[in-house]
Structure formats: C-alpha cells, structure tokens
Image 1 (cartoon, rainbow, N blue to C red):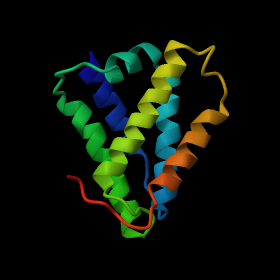
Image 2 (cartoon, rainbow, N blue to C red):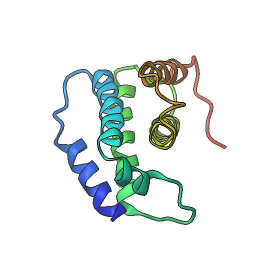
Image 3 (cartoon, rainbow, N blue to C red):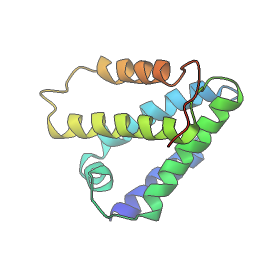
Length: 134
C-alpha cells in the first residue's frame, strides 16, 4: 500500500512541469508535498512514518527526485551545500512537519509554520562554504 502511495506521489511530482526557475520549482515542490499530506493523511502516514529497516525503492525515488531538483538549484548558484545533504535536510523537515500536523493538528495548527520552516531551510542551505560528508 505504501509503495502504491509513493508511485502516486512520484507520478504527481514528475507530471509537474518544470519552469526556468529551479528555486521556484523547489518551493512549489515543498508546498505540493504539504498539500499531498493534508489531502491524504492516512496514506501519507503509511508512506512516511519511520519504519526501521524499510528498503522501499519507491521511497528512494522520491528522495532522488528531490536531489535532482536540488542539482538544478546548485547549477544556478542557489545551493551551496551538496544536493544530497540538502535533500536530507529538506525531506526530514517536510516529512516531520507534515506528520506532526497530521498526528497533532491542535498543536501544529499555524499555517505559517510551513513557509517559515521552508524559508529557514533555504537560508541554511546557502552557507559560504561546503563541508564534505565524513
């Protein structure tokens, strides 16, 4: 069931037309992710709630799509960290916020939090120099 959800999510992401503005596309992708979670809370929870030892190829495709968007951002100088590291940061924040909004909407009810988090990540992904993973 989770893999079916990933396939549906991936199809939505790949069907979205890219613009000449990779950062705008990335920001729209964040919003689309949050909308998918809001519109499909049970499926989203099944797809993205931590499952230790899960090796879903569909989940990896979601991650790879995000890395590809971040490579586009890096190509125009809008990303100063490794796209893989940026993807880890973004997906962790996006999924964490979405799961919290689904699980405890009374605590996570401010609609501005998503954009504040997105803005904070955007600033954090633009440091002066990249430090290698190690």
